[in-house]
Length: 286
Image 1 (cartoon, rainbow, N blue to C red):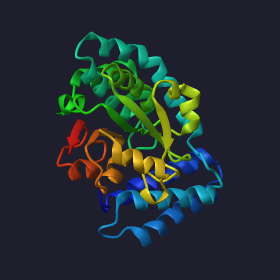
Image 2 (cartoon, one colour):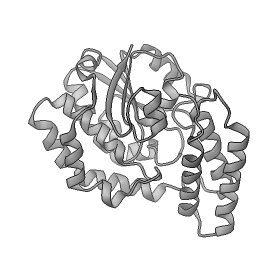
Image 3 (cartoon, rainbow, N blue to C red):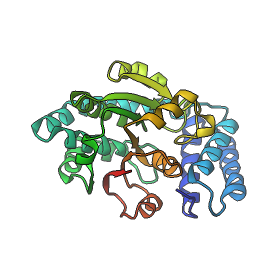
Image 4 (cartoon, rainbow, N blue to C red):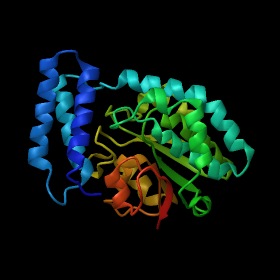
């Protein structure tokens, strides 16, 4: 996916948010925002991949702040909130049509996204709101196609909190005979899951192996990815790409077949997919 002018205010809102998470020093917060503006001035160009710009702006903000993980507390909060809601989600999945429902639950989990403009954790991750999203269902539903492709799955994870809900889909994939290579970020960026959270949550025991993207790039940067990950992507019977950042990246590459599981929280992503904002999407592309 390519950059859009509306990416600029969204990215700057995240820089301001992570600066406030990192420090109470107003002068330092201002420096981070001004650095972000300079990155936008240089790299907000037609035809540039969206994740190239977002990676540059957040790396520069982290450098200015002297903080490699401003979201550390928010990530823990997301995981704890998701764990409390996991029994509710598990009951929902167990009622019927468990694979489709597990896919839906993993997409609803994509709502756990601190730093997205307008996201309010207190309002958006309560039991009633989660159940409303479960009952809404999938707006794009390719889950039947997914079920025939689960022999060797590469699962590109996204946010903390969300990844707790992903475990229900891991279980369904393995019940259907599939093997899972879980992929998380190689270093902290935003509220994305890393190997640290994998170990804390015991996710390595729920999949067949765990790899990282090799860096803190937004989504996946192939130039920074370890060879074993590139090989795994090429050999996968299905790549499951969670969330918008992974979509923004993977839509630039030719790895197929791929299933995009996400909520279109961003108008630019929705437009790129030919969809509307705030849709629950499980789309397979071959």
